[in-house]
Image (cartoon, rainbow, N blue to C red; front, side, top):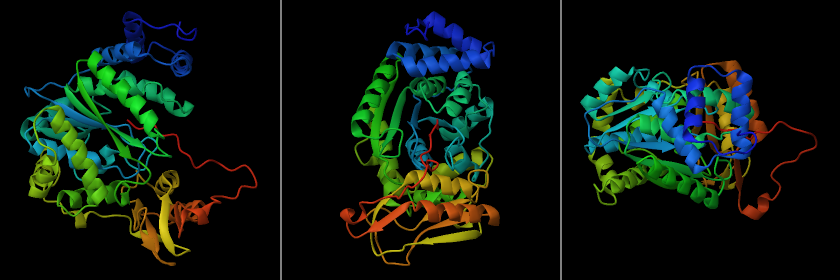
Length: 420
């Protein structure tokens, strides 16, 4: 029916989702179905039905807490460690935020890998309930919890095909299963993100808001700047270290601003705080204290210091070949470089940026450093860095009109991003 363009009713969608969870569909049948969803599209009614069915066919998080909130990013930005700052801010303010996250699929690091540097993240639902009871929050891997388990099967088909028709129900079903009543959705927007312009961001936000109404959830969206990495670090250990420094009040301005503004949106949704409250919580040290409580409750060392987190000791420095300003930073090549260096499997691998867009640099200044624990991987990553030149320096934009020279077919550095 979907291949022919028909709209599916809830009963049929629920049967399909249950068959997916019970593994009754062949690979060919499931691939055909996902492809049909991509080519024919999903209506809001269908998205709501998928979300409900995906929740019903999985487990649900249980807690005595009355109000549960959550945050989600649709992804696409390297170095996006916002959740590690926002979650403790919200929890330190007395609200419950059980954050489940995915591991990296196409990126150098997911929230689960960042947090895993500090504490175990592979917890059972019972263990998560205990952590949340003690701390009001958690930061865990959601892959083994059976929350909306059909999503994992859908992703197995979507990723190799380079399509993402289940974006809306995938996100919303996980939030519904965790019991979230209030959710802030981060929509990073920029040339190399999933959402390339403000118009598309508004359309997606409207879909999230409407779907939230159908599911009896309060949804708010934040359209955020996605033209460069967030913060200065990319890769599990580097990002975990930067997140802890940020909770100590010593982090990069863009990360602080993004985390606190999204937290303020969540506060506003719940009618709880005035604008700027999140930054006050961060500056007070309460968020860092809360993060250390979460780390301990999940089985980690609450006394861990950011400067003691080990990163790859084999490094390659990429220097500027010109004087001027950083005109732009290309995210996709940085992702390729970090992954080639070994991230996320090698937790110490990644990239430490030394500059951001608009910064003034001299010829020979270090633009970024590549870290790895393996000389061969570092060598391969350095070759990609020299070839793709992810950071463009010039005195004026009009001096950099030629971006690349192409004389033959070359593999694209544009990465299909499928992060949940």
